[in-house]
Length: 119
Image (cartoon, rainbow, N blue to C red; front, side, top):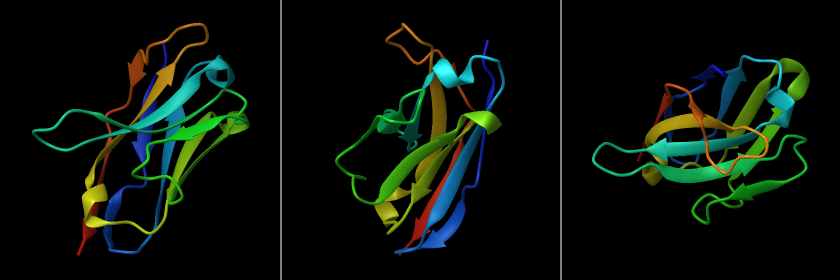
């Protein structure tokens, strides 16, 4: 079982930056692929970024590539999402998720943190 708690959301102006954090419980954190997703009311959940257990492999949605950076600190059981050059269309609830080693599905999800970008 993995428990995930996000923080760092808030209100920011267009062009601003935020850094989201996601702290995970559990001893096997470093073996989990971690993902960031976002959700807007009335729309489906959208993939934002993912990072491998070692942090050496990352992937991003085209809409955030070059602006967002995923990283992790396995000693702190924490994954981060640095968001720069924010746009109003980035407004959403951001959730982190864990994909256990050897699986293809994100089995554990946090509650999310709200990010609002004003124009």
